[in-house]
Image (cartoon, rainbow, N blue to C red; front, side, top):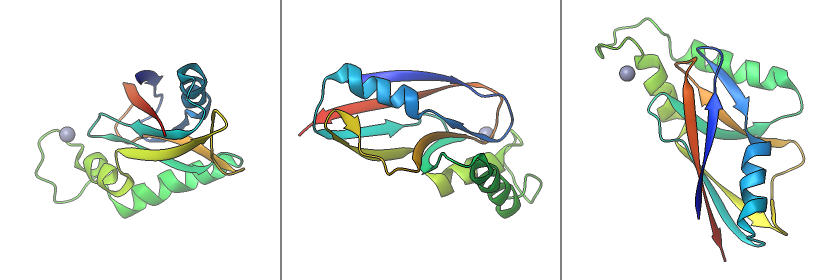
Length: 132
Ligand code: ZN
């Protein structure tokens, strides 16, 4: 099965915690053991897994990305959002997550995040759950 999660972002750059929404998809799938793939079908947003306890970690990741890939540089892409495209290359469009006992097998401090690099926008994530 594949399910879609809608996410409304509120800033140009932010990490949005979608762990609860992905967990709901897993619960509804009925899969007890397998793999979930969380895929971001956008070219200026991505998906990652990182700490969801201290929100400063999210802030630090956004700050690092902004410092590493400047918004103004010798970019050619006419939309003016080349930095966002490059940040997606660094982050990646998909995360595989094991499913065990009907739940995401995340570590204690891990959460799933949509990484917005050119918001605010309406975004989607696709979640594919496979038993096995
Ligand atoms: Zn663009």
